[in-house]
Image 1: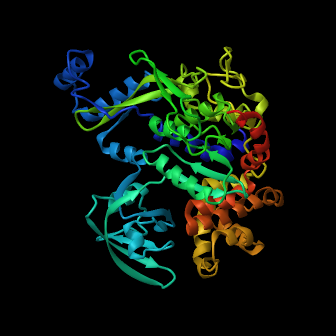
Image 2: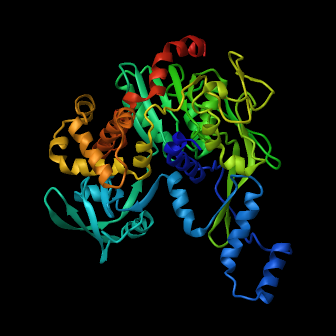
Image 3: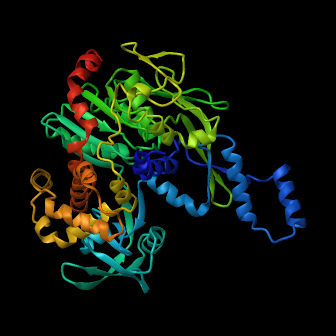
Length: 539
């Protein structure tokens, strides 16, 4: 693999993992199965023989899980088994809430650092602040003991109404403060950011399609509408999907009534159509949707429907290509399977599911796209199905079988990559430095009145960048060459600034800073006039 790939490897693996975590599109509540392994079949016969005759003691629970995993993996890449112990966590991301103390944290230098106390949560109400360090939970020391994120979740999350005692070190006062926190229901937001990019164009970033996403979208949209929004850029990059019903609700806000949004069909599932029904909040304005190789499932339903009806423009890179519908089935021990029961089809009739005959190729598809040059060169986009499909209004040719193809391609940016940056990213040093730098300069930076002034006026200067270089070298990274600094300095400064903004203004801050160099957003703003000419007239 190339050196450039080494730089992107952590991002690509994280992308594939995130898609695996949110690959379900759920049509109805879980249906109970009394005993997946019951009845006269080879599984039960085999387990009985092993139990009676095998030479050693057998972990039958683990053996059963392995057998179920192998069976489902033989069907398709997205039918999965979820043990009872993991099911609650798996559902929380889409249910839109969990019960806990309400802090966003990172583990920095073997210490739990509070990034933010979540709005309306119990920690915020008690006065826990960004930058606080949690050093004890009840009687357990949690600093300097190589604690993991999983362990933190187990200690801090719990049933609403229960109490947990935490000891917090606050660097600004150099004091250890005791808090007794009553756990409560904590919302998980699926809209990361919304803001006006100029006097007419609003931007909304959706990270997943969860239970509350439609409600969050309406609130964000109404806020932007107060600022005279006329155009909308909807960012679905890296969005791995979620609930089908939520995707339909969102498209219904963007399409005229009675238009087909999506239909599903499977061997035992007759065709089911889902149409726009109610008046939407943004049926006529200029619309651009941003996608990339991490946009999957429900994201592809949204972008596919908008593209097929010529409602707006799709900008970015080819989407993931997941057109399989999973339905949840609960098992008797509290575990569950999510079983593929149908395929979904866009209004023009195309199924965007990519081929999964070779499951190894399927699992490494994103890496293969990078190595064959597709992510950098739009001319290398393949046509996966020779059968053409046509959009509903302008009869443009679109293709099936491998994701949604953008109307305009935006290459992945590797102009700032270097061997030095690869090592920095692999060791998460930019984030660690940003935490330390804000700690050392919190009084001055926190005095900046608002995000707008911070974004326009605050800069990571040469002295701060030199501090970062010293920090990286002291962490074991080889000193960069002048050429490496030339390539990567701008990117590193921007990331430090954005990560500081995230600590002060959460994701709104991060995206406000990072979008200054976002080529997809820049192209979307340029193409809005073309959107008006081609797609919105007579819609």
